[in-house]
Structure formats: structure tokens, C-alpha cells
Image 1 (cartoon, protein in one colour):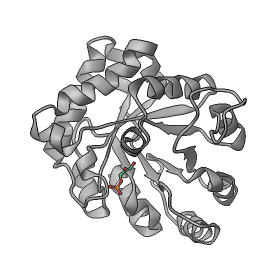
Image 2 (tube, helix red, strand yellow):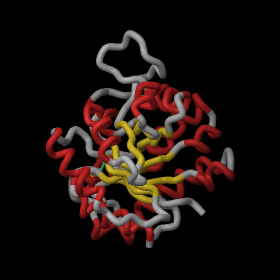
Image 3 (cartoon, rainbow, N blue to C red):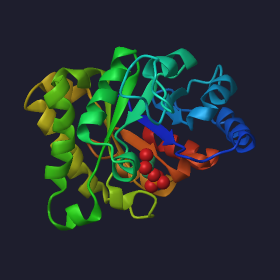
Length: 251
Ligand code: 13P
């Protein structure tokens, strides 16, 4: 049985004051014991969030890490070892906003994935197709290639200590959600791709869905066989809405 997880990606949102408000709201949430909950604040606020959520069982992660695992001369970047030192346990790698706007390719994503694991962080590998790729019938090919980028350089075994997030680019921040059946098709294909090399790893890995997840759509998405929770953007900035999504994962 895979333990469901709901993760909030705050993206480039927040000020010290709004983060303090959000922490206050998160502290008040009644969380289901069977669901893992995590938040990914902007790096600048990670310490504030870790201190603010002390004693609350919520993991804190970063939205990115450097391709090099350890501190060194790499201006503007943050090493996985530094994130671990700050108290993070997870890190997103390969979010589509970084792939598309910052030109992050599969090679860089694999290096970040490896850097995260070498420092004891759990990478959350984000994959997903654009609208044009979906319309061209290339969804499974694109997602399969993104997954292969990691498998070919690091081996399938690394997914025993990782999480995958399927986030169709056309559903991110648009209010459009993949239907539960559409999402399930991709999640099942991702799991099958891993299973072709290692059935145990495939069975154990959690695959989250992301893309306009709201409290109203969460329960139906999370009821699908291969959807193990959600990676939530906009709705995670509202503690009550985020809490409702976390509860949906527990039912
Ligand atoms: P939205 O929930 O705002 O669509 O964002 C999804 C996402 O990109 C999470 O990483």
C-alpha cells in the first residue's frame, strides 16, 4: 500500500508577512494521520517555515537545487547539502516552469536528482507534456522520455527513494485539470515503464498528480488506482483549501 502524499508548491509567491499568515493557517489544520503532507516555499523562506511548523508533522522541501551536491563556487545556486542542513527533506526537480523558462534539460534534471539523493533528500521528479504535445498524441512519448532521462543516467533503482509528479503543462495554473481518467492513463504508463525494469520499485513509488488541483477536484483524482496524491500550486497558498485537499487524500 502506498501512503498518499499532498505537497504544496508555493512557487515564487510570498513575503515574510504572508508566509507567517500561511504558517498560522497550516498549524491550525487537522491532518489525517495516514497522509504525508509537505510544503515547498521559496528558498528565502525555508527557515521561517521550518521554524514556524516545528512540531507539526509537515515536511518542508525546496523547489530546486544545484547540479552540484556540495557547497562551492556556483553563484546564485543552493546545494542539496545546504538544503539538507537547513532542515529540508525533499526537493522538486524538473518542474516544467524551470524546464521551459530556464531551459533546464533532462541532463541537468538527472544531475539535480542525483545531487538530492546523495545528500539524503528525496527528489520529486516532475514530468508532463505541453498542450501541443498532447494534441499531437505525444503525451506518453514525452513523459516517457523525461522519465528515461533519469533512468538511463542513474538506473531505475533510484526511484525506490524518490517521488514522481505528473503535471501536464496545459493544466498548470490554468484552471484546466486533466480528467481523472486522463491522468490515470499517464500514471499507469509511468508505473509500467518502471515495472518493465523493476516491479518492486514500480509498485512502491508514489506518483502525484499536479495541475489545477482544488479541493473540489481532489477526491476524484485521488481515487484513481495509480494517483497517490497531489502536487498543488495555487490552491496550496490558501491553508483551508490546502487542508481540504489533504483530507481528500486521506479518504
Ligand atoms: P497549479 O496547482 O497552480 O496549477 O500548479 C501546479 C504545479 O505546478 C505544482 O507544482
